[in-house]
Amino acid sequence: MSLVRRNDALDINGFSNTVTTNNHITSRGSNWYFTVCALMSVSTLIFMGLSLRKPQSHRLFHYIAAAVALVAAIAYFSMGSNLGWTAIQVEFRRRSPKVAGMMRQIFYVRYIDWFVTTPLLLLKLLLTCGMPTPTIVYTMLINEVMIVCGLVGALVKTSYKWGYFVFGCFAFFFVAYTVAFQGRSYACTLGQDISKIYTMAAIPIIAVWMLYPVAWGVCEGGNVIAPDSEAVFYGILDLTTKLLIPGLLIWNHRNIDLARLGFHIRNVPEGGLPGSEKRGPHQQTGVAAPATANTETPINTV
Image 1 (tube, rainbow, N blue to C red):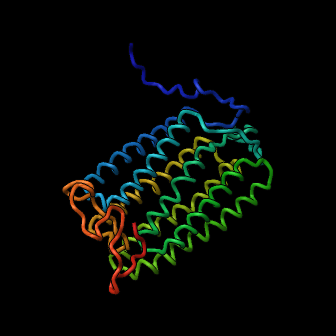
Image 2: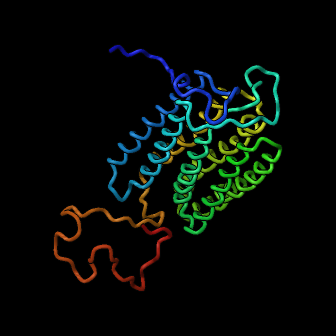
Image 3: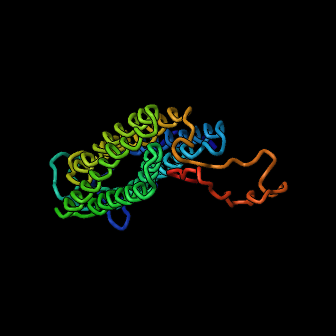
């Protein structure tokens, strides 16, 4: 059996999925999606491989980065395979033949990806600055509101989609304020080195995230650019926020003790798992020794 290098995903999966689209990606867009999928997949393996060089108690940020890249790889595989989409009637009919079709292809799998990965990116970032857990959880929740508004707006054919766009932008402004201002304030209290690491990641990621509403406006919202161009636009943004910035953050974390961020994660003892040797009164498995008067409570305890 001979192997032929070709991408026939569009022929196999077609453009009829309860509805038919006439404003969709071509083989160029599909090839680009598969390229991003490959980069995300390789990055997943790299992040996991790098984690093996660290003690188990120092692998948290590697695990988050690997999870983000893995979910993104699955989403881009789906889009490259021409799956995970529906067709929505456009609000604005354009004369350009590339966007002249009335039924535009909307990849809802993209929003599933964002719903899972953007909270993880925020978690990784806000843990770096030692932000209190309630604030982290609330910021992640508002981020989910932003993603859901983007998805619902993309699935609406009338001008009401812009109402969801406005709600999503308000949610984004809250997330951006928390990351850019509150996060930096907490990072400064942990030392100049951590403040620098946080700023080097927080400012670029918020700057790139500001381009997502622009992309939405000219793609799902306004039907200005073709679905192939949409693939390139979103792909570059995702590669920046899910590979480059997380990779930079992992590199900058290499000499930072997680205890400074408020983490106290136990390693497996060299002699094996607890239970292989005699325990003292305060060495029961999963039970911490009682705190003394001089014990400080960490910001984030794992």
